[in-house]
Every structure is written in C-alpha cells, then in structure tokens.
Image (cartoon, rainbow, N blue to C red):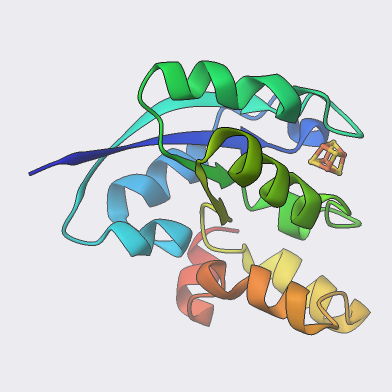
Length: 147
Ligand code: SF4
C-alpha cells in the first residue's frame, strides 16, 4: 500500500506543543486524519508557522516536499486559537500554487472546551470558517476526549 507523507504546521502561539493530540489522532485516524482511513500515513515533518504573519509558511513546505511530503495539515490550533489564524485561506492558496502540495485544515478533533467557547463567541460565523472546521468537529464524546 502506498504511504502518504504528511507535514504538520502548528500555530506559533502553541510553539512549545509536543504534538500529543496531533500524533494521537493521526494514529487513530480521528479528526482531519479521518480522510486517511484504511491508508498508510507517515508524519514526516512538524514545524510552526514561525509566528505572525507566518514567515515559515514561505519556506518550510519546500523542505517538506524534498522529503516526500505531499499533504500539509494546518494543526487544529490554527482554527481554535483566540482568534483563529486570519491567514489560513491565503496560506493554503500560496502553498498549493507555489509547491503544488495539498493543504488540509486541521489535525486532531477540536477539544470540547474550545468548541464551547467558540460556539458562544459565534467565531465560525461564515461559510469559509464553517467549512474549515468540518473535518475536526467529530462528535461531542470524541471532542471531550481531546480536552
Ligand atoms: S495566528 Fe496564524 S500566522 Fe499567527 S502565529 Fe498563528 S498560525 Fe501563525
């Protein structure tokens, strides 16, 4: 079976994160990793965006591509930070245009505590944002297990 190589980019405000939730959900194919059900995957790269406005987005994909990465995931922190990253749409277009790589929004399921606060804030209030969190929504029990 062909293996898909994945690169994860995290929002720099969580730059000390060891990736526990991302690696866990990749192993269990939860959240955005559910798109690889029944597929072999390898997380071949992990880095931060470099801090606002995401300077590392310009260069990191090139190095990832050299190691065979085809799919870049923006970690769920991009979507659930306060506020969510305002640049995700541009970053995705840029990476797809310049490097021809696929960009997927999200990694692990949204933790319930973030889901609750953002729902109360009405953060995901347009079609683009609603679409961007789709793969990471999961059900409430799964979200609670990621709190
Ligand atoms: S908000 Fe966006 S650009 Fe800023 S640190 Fe987070 S991911 Fe990077």
